[in-house]
Length: 336
Image (cartoon, rainbow, N blue to C red; front, side):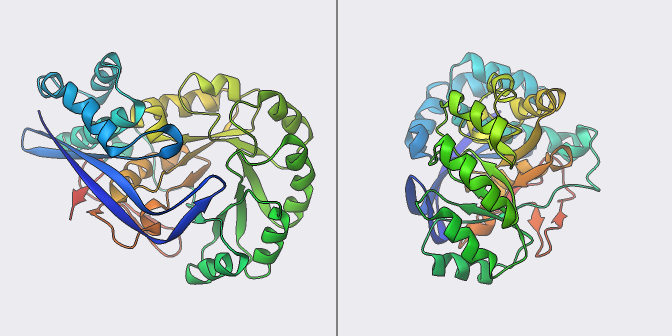
């Protein structure tokens, strides 16, 4: 098996801001795995919150390149276990795991959702994210991209006012993501006002480790609350079940499709709502997420839609939210 690693700097359509950071470009690592005349592609983006850069991920993989290329690849699960044993970061493992799954499906000539025995005739529509900005610019972004579901990034002292103004311009479903910026008291107070404005749920309002605050929110919020920064790896699912109504799984944070599938299964056993989110990936990462959507309650896979220029072909998301799945195997990815 042969590895190739390449850096891409993905330009965004608009400056993307959340409560703790802003950026105009997204650094991304694309990994390809070649075997038996087939090539699988995977992706992991850099992230300052988790102190992950392209350079750190590439260095990790290069340190064990020889062992990876010498691995007797049979299926993604065994390969993922091998990568974990090498103590790579979950971000680096994610890129390799996505590539391995894409490769596996291409070798078998079947899309992943079919290999997993899931029916893709029904699935949730992705939301479209409106980054934190002036109200005028947030409205302009919505007008530029009419969509049935918006995720609204918040984290200011005027959050309810922002949502109230946005509501004047659309009948779409709203989801609110405060990215850890609120207190428990703010969350409980904001929830009924936001519910009246057509907000469906709140995503990670409190700091990731504020479990006491989240317990109060769970008992008093009139809106469901979905964990993001509090739910990173498989072992977090159990704890989140006591403090949240659902979880948002990020492939880069948990280490790829292989652990994400186990997290989905466990979350459903615990009666949690399940969402999978993106980290502004290109169509490489989004096509991998799309293979999971028949298993999900919600999905946030608008990463490629936020880019000025994409770097790959794969899953296509149409204007009405319908997903067109590639007919090729795996995640159906090809680089441009």
